Image (cartoon, rainbow, N blue to C red):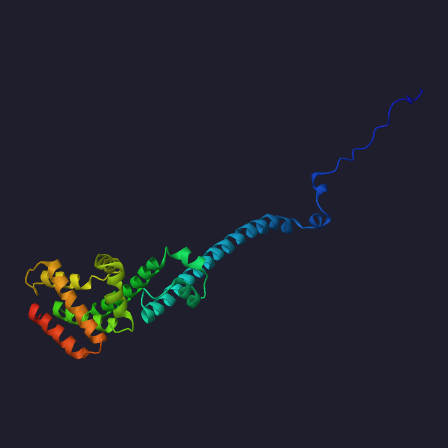
Length: 247
């Protein structure tokens, strides 16, 4: 029988398996090693997330550090020279920051002054709160609060900022708002507590708070000007003893 010479010979299949596209390094991986590759890629993506979080925290810390430096420098200059005589170029130079940094954190010099007073008022309120927490009676709480107030106000420059320049620049109404915002209502709360406990006869609370607050501030001013602190503390204590019943 004659062979059909026109019939094309059948070629064996040489289709590469799907894995043939792997690189030599990938082809040499064991199944266990190959199974780790997606996990490592996932870990790489996850690792970038903490980096971004750390960067955000770092930026926030730098911002807070800059703001604190501005307030610290401004406080020093406001105390030394007064609000009117202190310029923003001096403040940024003392804080070692740019004018752009100042205006990033504060609208103007008045806004920076306001922030400085908030820090001072908050420090006074925190000190009074710490010293009066364990008072056994309304009278003791009030007398401790008075002593704590005078101690807190003895910090150099604080009387000028809170009792002189603050009201002159911002006005008494805004200073009262700052007092409330920073928790500085200890006197009012103390009087209210004394009334609740029956240690103080019912009186118009706002009026009594205003009168006693003025007395405390006048005493702090006198002490800052060199008057004997013990004399004013004793006088305030006698006033409180006259108002409050001993428990």
